[in-house]
Length: 108
Image (cartoon, rainbow, N blue to C red):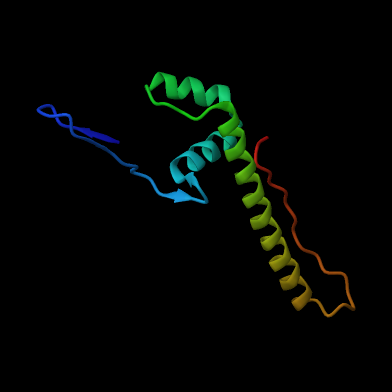
């Protein structure tokens, strides 16, 4: 955001969003939302153009995607390990245990 005085040459620019690991949280959320519904950079460019908002380049978009993929994989591994530990805790290893399994992936 930029503040400009009409009477003098004073101006001040500042960010209105938090940074997470040198990336703006709003950009990460935007890319995550688009990827969740299966949209890519071209859709982001069209949407931002329609609402007159600048958006990072294709390279920056890909960088944000890679960051989200890395974080998503870490979270998925943590959840699967916790779930496996819970199943093992309940199983006495003398019998076959049945548990539901599902698969969810981020649209790529």
